[in-house]
Length: 623
Image: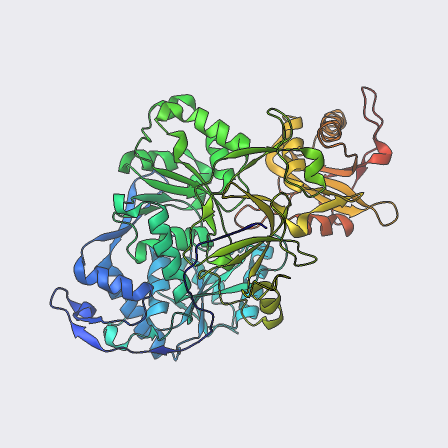
């Protein structure tokens, strides 16, 4: 049976309360730092207070502008003072411990001030993606989150306040104004138990509607401490990141880890838009500050290869970089190979590439330190078995590392029967860990189904988080193969969508990187067929060019996987639905196809209109 654990006792109860603990006088700081609390329960703000007591002038964060130069910084003492002012303002507004507060901010240090201020008030911050007023869908997404979590009010800055204040049903307050002085940490609220909710982290919605994950103070402390050990914090950490602050990777791995003192040096942050406009800025900063750690999704590393030049790379020295984590989406073999080869002239060490696996429901990470490549037999893979293939044959998967959390146990389980899988079978990844969140906010049924699952093993009394991801263990490494909901079943064979997408992306140069979605649709009878969304580099390809793309993609898939495509839709950028973190929303693509809601200037081709070969016949239907 496949299971891996690090056995230590951990919590299994849920409590929601807060308290004001006794204090001791600190002679080393001014203002609110005069009162520093002796905590029975550790938390983000208690860790921040200790840091501010010991080194109030320590720089915690530096925000970098589009030019790669430092724009603003904040010290531990500054953060305690701003948190105190914001907490005092929230109390004056009637906010009570446990109230939800929606945070709508662009990437900035002001977000961090608001985040810590909410925690100091005992409120539950809800970081969200700042909407684009010109794109109604983003405003709708914000409204859906507000409707779901029923916040007491929202916090924002001058930029967004002018748009959000039009909402008469919700109170919006700015934190970038001159606020009244606070009353000191003696009036702060601290968790009385590790299982008090610290924040609501909304999921990306890659396979459904976003849900608010209740992450506790205990989750965050365990996560950051375990990560400090796994990432070598004792050797020092100077991190550089551009991952959005409202996603778990950016919020917890960069911001929260710095607040609790994991990082010995300042953490350098920049806007994701800074990176997307000019990926070279990421490397400019890492070179300038001698970064030791960074993290990004797979697409970030792929974009860095495409959008930087050999001349630029020769000018960077990345020899100080000990860990370049790849997390948040499946790690592609081609990305690792291309990045390591391209940045070898920058003194980037191949062993620094650091694949990891995690999800918001387990705070942020489950396993770390992967990179081992394993080739699997394609035929056995379609039958649900992880059987190694001879060198040079089969499909290659990247290991996502080993389980790093004390007390955690991870099992591979058949999602239909709840029976633990044998060592050679692929199943759903089930996690029991002290970093498992408390559940989904205001969704008791989904919480029970997803966070309290039990196996059909009489000797196993644990309750597991069902991740919804499929995978297997080999030599202690966790390998992730697909999302269970995204799995395509054709004639009884399991088809993993990212494998199809990788084949399609490599089949023709006009197919945009990251612009492919593979999903199942009804075909003949009760059978499922394969459908594709393909984004091409030109806004609207001429008929001949579209024909070339279809021929290349469908033929490549048939050769590599033995599958005939039921339908393909070709269009420009934006055809493939994605989350705010760049994950492909395959279920949304499928629904768009089934609803016949294809965007203008897209072309659909079905197998009835396609015959592989030099003289293939096809008929385009403009949607």
